[in-house]
Image (cartoon, rainbow over all chains, first blue to last red; front, side):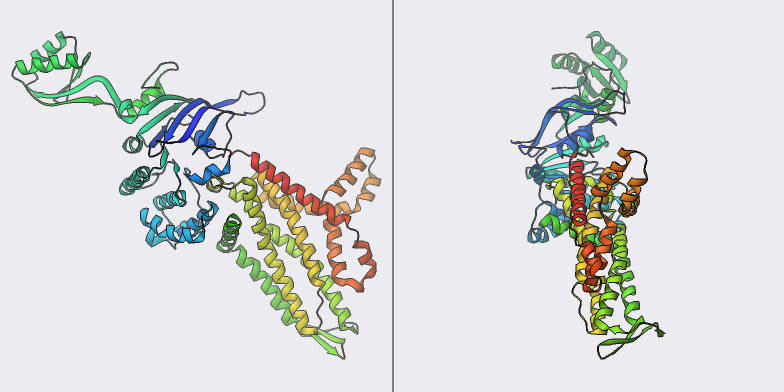
Amino acid sequence: MTTLIEVSGLRKLYRSSFRKPKIIALDGIDFQVKEGELFGLLGPNGAGKTTTVKILLGLTHATTGSASVCGLPVRDPESRRRVGYLPEGHKIPNYLTARQALSIFGRMSGMTSADIAKRIPHLLDQVRMTQWADVRIKKFSKGMTQRIGLACAMVHAPQVLLLDEPTDGVDPVGRREIRDILRAEADRGVAVLLNSHLLSEIERTCDRVAVLRDGKVAAFGSVKDLTQKSAQYKMVASPIDDSLVASFRETGAGVERVNGHVVLSVDDLQHLNTLVDQLRSRGGVLSELTPVRETLEDVFVGLVRAEEGVSVGAHS
Amino acid sequence: MKVLAANIEDVMREAAARWTLIAYFFLSSLFIIIFASAVNLDIVDGALAGMKLFGKDTDAPEMSIEKFVLGFESGFAGFLYLLCTFMAIFATAHLVPRMQDKGTVDLYLSRPVSRVKLLLSRYVAGLILAGSNVLYLMGAMWLIMVWKTHVANPRFFVGGAIIMLVIAVLLAFAFLIGVVTSSTAVSIMVTYGFTIFSAILVTHDKIAAAVSKDWQAWLIDGMYWVFPKTFELGQAVVAFVGGELMPDRMSAVLNPAPFLTTAAFGVGSLILASWLFTRKEF
């Protein structure tokens, strides 16, 4: 798969007022996003997420390091021909109708009037805004404005989508629809970089994530890898009496009773199988045995609270 | 061209939606209608025999109708010079600050358009908006005069061209202030203040003679030559439109220096605005 977004050793210092030290917004971050991939960028406020996206769009310039989109350096305006961007809290000129906004931004992206005329009905249908096509944006709710913002980002069929809080203000049904749209875009080869505070959205939508903290990548990997707690399993069985728990503990396993089931902490799979054998030898019936996963929020909070220098997650 | 067309459409739609365009043309139309209905000329054998203003006789001296038209149009062009430049800056100074709003600027800059091209497209769109009003006002007044006197003075439009030059220069300066401050109010205030200050500098010789130190005199003279010559160009509008009616004034304004230095100031402002906009981080 082709790499569509490449960030290497990106560092950004912001000048502060006189005699005060410079602020380090980004401190040498690296990541790549390939075609067809949904990539999430997470981090607490001030971690450098927005700065990263702004550098990718040429809105701000990196102090050192490089960034490219579709193989073109981000300083080249041509790189933006392949990028669609939805900023957080965007203000699409509200005196325009949805159709006029799509037409103006389509032409600014180099599209011909004929192409725009063909594309607009399809896009409006995709974001479920067909009946609002000729209504001024100032009449729209926040969720509707967000849908039109997404349509404006996609108007020129870009190869890369950079989306900042795309589901902000959108109702649950709308969120699902937006997730479906993003998945469909990824399926046709678009690289989607999602910047959101809604961790559940990222968890549901993204294939891989990078967690930024203090301008550095604190964790990087697939959502599955980041959320799997090593060597913890949930066991639902009956009966799980005190003598069984005691025999588990004798093998060195950690056992915690939680709402009618137990959470086992084992050394490895062999150890886990030993515990299952013990259960069966006592006539117990196993009805569920699953690896314990953290939510992305647990991982995120853990990373944010972790002290500097403590490695958490699968940083690579 | 697509970018320019998109920006022109954007600027015109904004002007229409925010009532700027309607107010702009409503005021101009009101002015034209009042003028057309208020002035009645009594022409006998190609000479102005009398004039009624709002139905009342005025003691206009008897003169050839050509002379009357030249005199009237030159005076009127001087008035339009002030009116059109004032209205143009008021109607267009927001174009850059509003584009630089957080959440809006990202939408424009994330398109495959260089920042210079984006800024210049909006500048041209602003000039078209202001120019359309100048053309409307001057064209309508010219037609009314042709209708009432049967005398066509094409020099009236030379005055329009000079007005457009001044609007272009002041708009470039307003864009520069807009890029730096991102404030519509500051852009308007600074541009108006600057226009008045530039007009005062026409007396730079007297001011320079009155100051006590050499460097102050050089500073005053230097500012005069660098800043736009808003007063001289206003005089030029009147003299060019009046033509042979006022040969002394005409010869006084035939000096190209005020035109060239004013145009250079506009180009310099636009280059500086483009350079700062290119370097600006959002």
